[in-house]
Length: 395
Ligand SMILES: Cc1ncc(COP(=O)(O)O)c(C=O)c1O
Image 1 (cartoon, rainbow, N blue to C red):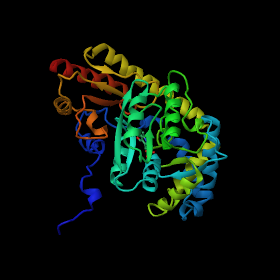
Image 2: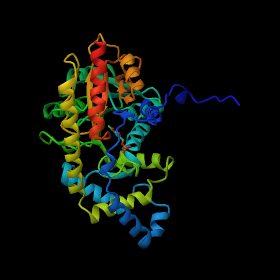
Image 3: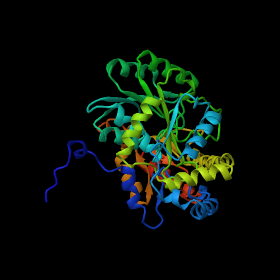
Image 4: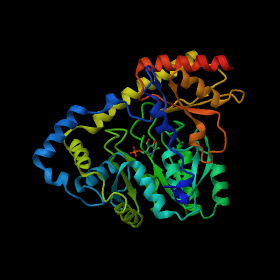
């Protein structure tokens, strides 16, 4: 049968990153492509004990349908942590549990955007969000990302050019893919512009807990005085990505609409894993666990930077992240990115080309993303050497 797909899906491409996963079976392959947490960061023993306890003591709840808003004890724990850890006013904002941070982003777009509506994003931006916007018929419009966050002039120009933009999608802390953090000054300026142009902000903060250098900065949501910031985050990078437990916090009217949209997607987030998250927070020290992950990433990131500092030709620039999972390398214009990516692939080294993260995918990029959380130390050493030697030969 000939399939005649919807207009929305006709131009959607598979995620370049998920496609790279398929090539990783080759022996000795080194992936700097994924955004996966380090496998050694999963608290396997604790989770397996808690899972057994849930089935022994509360199996009916774990196996039954539940409420869309989320497992009540988990909602309370998340709200309390948002208040304590990120100074978010959870008394005047509602908290919704979602199936990963990804679903929170998608639900926000679904309830806010009509076909053809504009969402203003940093350029580059998170591919999962860009594809969610595209799949709903919304158009991501990119604003240049500078070393200290989104260009404020660029943002104002985009707001002027798109007076009906439905929201700003921003990853202010340890940006994916660029590893950049927005300065305090820019956070204030972004919020002021959002007020001036009366637009909603979707603040995506999956990496906010993973700071291993520099000073903590306030979330945009903690600066929110008029309910215009929808905050979303996830347990994916601090507990387990496969659990698919995330959350959104913001204006109750907006979240109630997202609840309705969620009901037709998955009814509710996997209740067993919500219970597991809640039990972990109740019975173990999540903050201590996060501290060990931070140490692990501090170490892996400094090793990657050390290798880059030692071997990378000086024509190539790269960011020096203070947290999160990624750094962003930029080649000189003379070196074609596509060729480099293919040469690396042949040697079993995988990186993600910058074009993947462009709001307009037809615009070429001379950058690529490197992940340091997933590869082992030995892989970081070997893979970065291969990367640098391959670039050196091409210059
Ligand atoms: C910026 C950003 N937002 C959201 C997500 C989604 O996270 P989750 O796995 O919880 O859906 C990710 C995952 O990589 C991300 O990098």
